[in-house]
Amino acid sequence: MSLLSVRNLVIDYAETRALDGADLDVAPGEKVGLVGESGSGKSTLGSAVGRLLPRTARRTGGEVLVAGEPVFDLPPAALRRLRRRHLGFVFQDPIGSLDPTMRVGAQLRLVLGRGADVNPHLERVRLDDPRVARAYPHQLSGGMAQRVAVAMAMAASPELLVADEPTAALDSQVREEVLNVVFSLAADAGTSLLWLSHDLPAVARRCDRVAVMYGGRVVEHGPAREVLGKPGHPYTAALAGSAPAAAAHGARLEPVPGRPPVLTGPSPGCAFAPRCALAVDRCHHERPGPVRVRDQDVLCHRAGEVTA
Ligand SMILES: Nc1ncnc2c1ncn2[C@@H]1O[C@H](COP(=O)(O)OP(=O)(O)OP(=O)(O)O)[C@@H](O)[C@H]1O
Image (cartoon, rainbow, N blue to C red; front, side):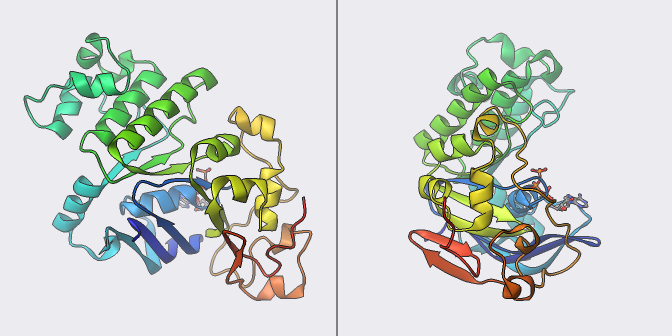
């Protein structure tokens, strides 16, 4: 049974179509990487999991189920309960995600309950110095602030943690430390992880599965090493073949010539067709449905024809 199930989700921001029929499943305890170029819809999908989208966003179709509950159809109190029981979130900007006017300990107690001992929670994210609990967020380094944010998100042992590029603002040494904390806490608690990332080698190393987004859809989904090592979709092949050394250092990926699409409605065919070396006529006007290639689900009319 899936803990998270996203079905044919369509999200619009005014004229922009950010998700164009996205599908995704995360099983209990599974670590899933969500990758794709800037603008492919990763953050929109990650935020939609908790219905944390900006006010300008509109769900035009599809649904999100968390532990079987339809997130977009719940009344406010039930939604708050679902978030509290099942979900944790960590975002890109560690200091911005904390309240600048409250000491770290006081913020953690908002989650844990008044009078709770915050020190074990800080120690779990390898912040052993007792001064951290008395500090204000601006007194922390980016890496420390992100570890506090992780401690808060994991305090209630959520079933699913959505981490939206939690290390994008950190330098490479600190990035590894924060990721180690996130993955080891999630493993200890049996928490599933949906990790939005640009770092393909790290996703291949750390995740069970990967979902590759393009033009607001998950165009390939399957075991991480297989998908990134032997892609079934031409877009995954382009992404995986693009400067892996640069990707390892967190650079933004620039995989193929041309620009990703900015959709204003449903893509008439495959959104990748204008940039795809394998595209044939039908790719431009017929939306591809899922095709099974080895252990991978691929949205492509020419799935499996990709060669290294
Ligand atoms: N608040 C917003 N208002 C209007 N358009 C938005 C908003 N947020 C995202 N978009 C648009 O929706 C599409 C998907 O954006 P999204 O941020 O989900 O992609 P992303 O893959 O997370 O990108 P990045 O890796 O840069 O964070 C893009 O075309 C983007 O410009």
